[in-house]
Length: 205
Image (cartoon, rainbow, N blue to C red; front, side, top):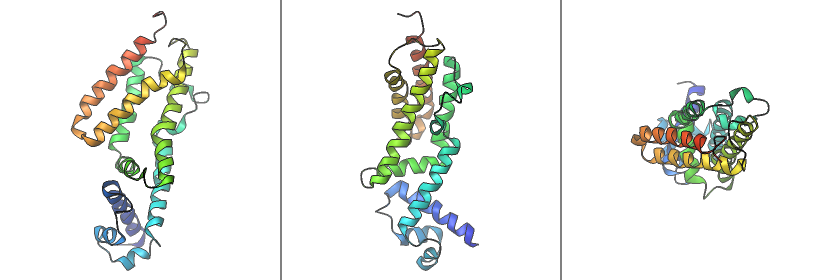
């Protein structure tokens, strides 16, 4: 096994352990055992458990930036992706939910953040950014554009965005706990988005 592959296996094993039992509860010995190497060999790749965590966070952020629609919340520059109908919104949002639920790195990193948010201030900030601030910012920008285009009634964009996206965040958390309910959640998301578009359809007042 070459050095590069071993380093990646250490990261994979660490993320799995951190996502199940947390950073503090995971020992270097457990990580080394999961990879099938000695502790001394692990230290030739990472100087500490914190160094492993720092590398994981960096890699997760890179993947998040590359693939998450919420990391690219700039509706002024990227208006071409604006979902102008409820059908388009359902397709876009369900696609992102599937990515969030099924990408192995993002899924485990999200679970790690849930565990660590009450113990690690830096990871708490990252949890808030990825799972609240970025999401609400994204949908607020989307709602503003839809209002300007006359697709939705004019109202408080931030409150409208909260009404749209926060139930979806709860359903994603439900899927993390109970993966077999994914189909049910996708159907709820579909109904929720369509009802939102109907409720704010111009001419409804």
